[in-house]
Image 1 (spheres, rainbow, N blue to C red):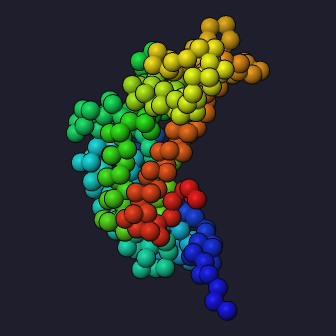
Image 2 (image 1 turned 45 degrees about the horizontal axis):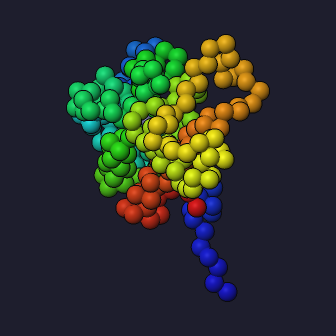
Image 3 (image 1 turned 90 degrees about the vertical axis):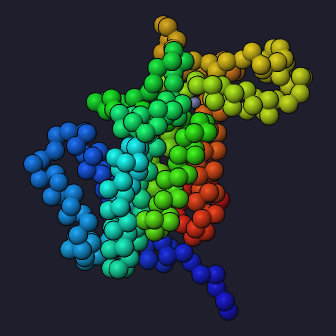
Length: 273
Ligand SMILES: [Zn+2]
């Protein structure tokens, strides 16, 4: 009897090693040792890959797209290709890391328009990654320019690096009050509402009156009651906004995965069904 063949990750299993940061990312974060450059170079040596194989590693997720401009990460991306070839030579699978954030100091040099790729709060601030990482902007997943940029990275990972696996990081709903209120998100939110409440009666029932053209995305800058102090959220528009933000992440990754599978049907990606 013919059985359906299982994908390699189900037959071989996954024992994963990883390194998300190109040298530029490590140095920009600071606190590196004097040997940072040599340590990074070692990760692209045959001896390193052979050692991973001996340790039983079946998948190596390596640095690829930290969100720097193309020029500033060109050398590291070439190394990702070398790492993929070394992995394949020694029977390991290779994956690339995609950070989904913008290293704006680097990106602005080539793409001044990248300000339109970044999340903007209700009071028009960029959203920084957090902690000391003031050099990273959080990306807006509803920004058409950001989606185009990420598709370029996916194409490069598949066609030039020859990777087996796309690892997308930061597929998250950023904590309030830092949700994106850019024009793309505002318009997408109104579209989302129109589709969920297609008739005047359903709109009136949910919000008390009809018409979404004048609706703005709600903000969670709530004096006297920060969002994390609430027992429950009663405002229907806030409830819809929470759903919309989850939908945004899944809509974004669905488009990225569909694009990747057009280029390479057996590429491993987040599972979208
Ligand atoms: Zn946005």
